[in-house]
Image 1: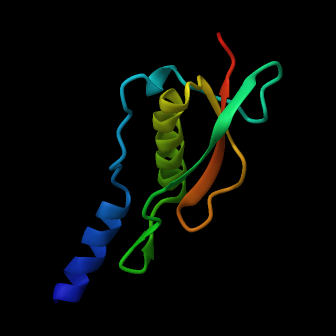
Image 2: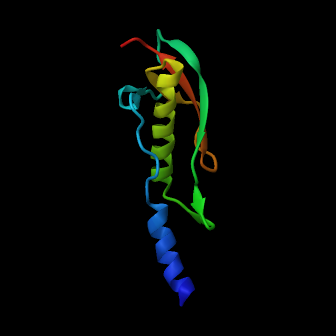
Image 3: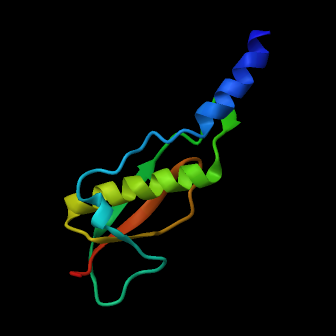
Amino acid sequence: MRQLLLVPLLMVLSACTWVHMAPGASAVRIAASPPAGCDKRGEVEVSVKHSIAFIDRNTLRVREELETLARNEAPGLGADTVHPLSDPVRGAQRWAAWRCGR
């Protein structure tokens, strides 16, 4: 009986968002490709849990959390724009950070 209750609970938890936007991160723009005329400030790798107890989390939610984490890192690098360098793999993704001066 416990196992029957555990599966729905894990599915609900897998949809939760645990990553919150840091101060200043909401001003960071997401670019689909390297922005033209901008100064590259560095790269970051961010990661989140992609599964809970062998149950994969919602792929869209994982992507959103990775994007939020990349945006959270940008102000610390003096960047105002980020773009993904790769697709997410097992809850990890590399991003480039740019200063575009907008």
